[in-house]
Length: 212
Length: 197
Image 1 (cartoon, helix red, strand yellow):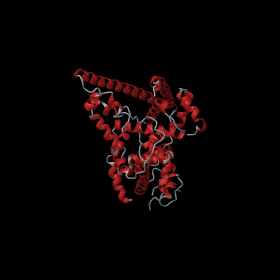
Image 2 (cartoon, chains in turn purple, red):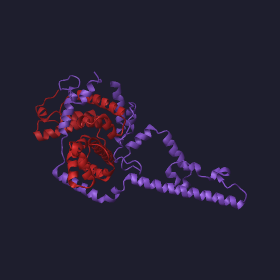
Image 3 (tube, helix red, strand yellow):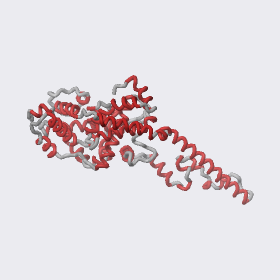
Image 4 (cartoon, one colour):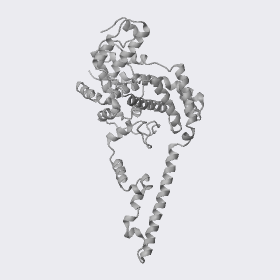
């Protein structure tokens, strides 16, 4: 007998009695686990933790004042300014070259489209600040934006503090408006791409599936 | 967590560094966090709890939400801390069926304090037979009563994936318990009386 739509909520809510022939033992086990894991930090540990909290607050005060939105807005401002300066330099250079040759059009975009960074202006902000990166990084960004791979998305979710780059900190509070798409097929991917310990647990999960 | 109407005031005070506010948040969250980390087999759950709060201190200014969301955020950090610890320790708490049986076989009539330890060990052994994610879902959903969306947020998975994990976890647990009727995980009194099968 399996879990149906009516039974599982009762199990979740722990409304299954122990004498239930199918799920009573599971209910009893969960009750036992709940009782077994009722430790509270010892008074010594509490004192240590509270001291660490206070210390962390005072140590990190300067960093905490720079919230991520502030940092990002400054970065965007610097990037936009750099892009404008680069554009002026190129356009100015084009005008100078045109005037040096004499009689050529003063709008280099019409004759030398390759020199005008107009396409680059449409690309990601980070790339505009470094014109030497060329288009390789742009293509990678476009590819990742156009077709996010579920595997990479799960991997990015599962990378943690030691692996994180500047943009996605797993310890940051989650955004309030999150949409969760229901996809039952994710479980296999989730199981395989979650932490390292699940590698051979997947085999057990797949074996267990056949019993269901 | 039961700060309820006071939560916003406490959170605001904690953002300003008020010790009393952090003590209240700690009192509300620490036992549940410790319970979760212990249930997940963390090698040093108390250290993890401390790290969770340090991370929260550093990022509290960016948090906006309800008390429930705050609690879910704390557990999210705890889970990341746990995984980091596992990666450092390179431990796998998986045990074979033999270990489950061995855990049950080690049960002997002992004093109540030792019985509680044996009970905890037996529970750990049975839970270690589940996959890590299955175990997480069971603890978060059943012991800590997080909703599906909250659990999905904590674990970084879709709600559908959580439902599937929960379903499989329950079936796997039922199967494990049926295959090993030695109920060492029962309350110490029952185990002391040798109430098996």
